[in-house]
Length: 381
Image (cartoon, rainbow, N blue to C red; front, side, top):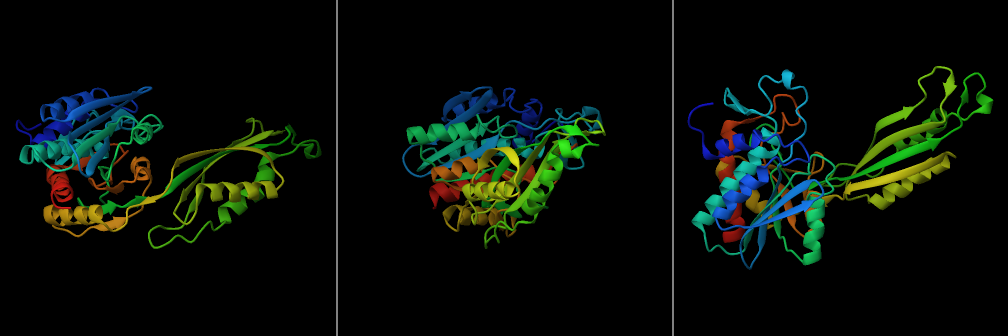
């Protein structure tokens, strides 16, 4: 490491050194809370189960702008397969390497710097500026922002705008922002058959054979045509298992896991009903359990989208693409509270991979980008 690091690079390195594999926060939020408390932020720690959540607020009446991020990371995988230790930040050729560098400790560090700079420059600012962090984004996502949103709803906590620091960019900082996400609905199907000897199929019922026509229909079904904002809903089987391991035994049970990524043209209820109807039509004996991890959401043209686009043009000097692609984010729990949500962060090419990294130049520009968004929303919106 060079002897002198920029403030955002220094904080990012401190966070990377904390091996906060989900749901362990490993002290990241305590570090951040201490810094923000010194700037006058009101600090609230929300602990649910094994998960740490931090809610830091500055200001009073008026519109609320929240920055949303996570301090947990995915496992590193084999440490020996990394070019440098995953939880020891390393600078090489203008890139900062380490687990969480892009997803999303770099963004979290940039949030902190931007918030510190904003309240220093505008101590009596209108509205409310906030930071929400969780250690349960990369895991089950049940005791993180989902639970915090329930708490906010119960006590009438208001959020008008939310900026998520997920790595949204494609090839350079700011070239893509997410203005919505598809919903995610998973099904856990168990098809019941009758185990028996392969030489006597008349005395058994093979659930693999029974399920195959239903699976073919599910895979071929056009669930919707999408719309101007979202691509069509997709169906994918992610896991399927049956059999005892023996070559002469017809299995008695098949287990399948599948997922819908769905747009606003379909609902979770309609997808459940249509898929269950297909399975029943093929005469299967089955049990089916569902898990809805998030509804689709869309932030339409308005102050937050305009402010974010303008901030990117000012700080990064480029025009941005507004997209609803990708997977899910914790924004899916904030949007139902009535907040507009955008996601803007570093390039996502290396996230969850070995040798995850972020460009130092992008990281050092990120606080200015978040600061520009905050100033546009709270001072000029």
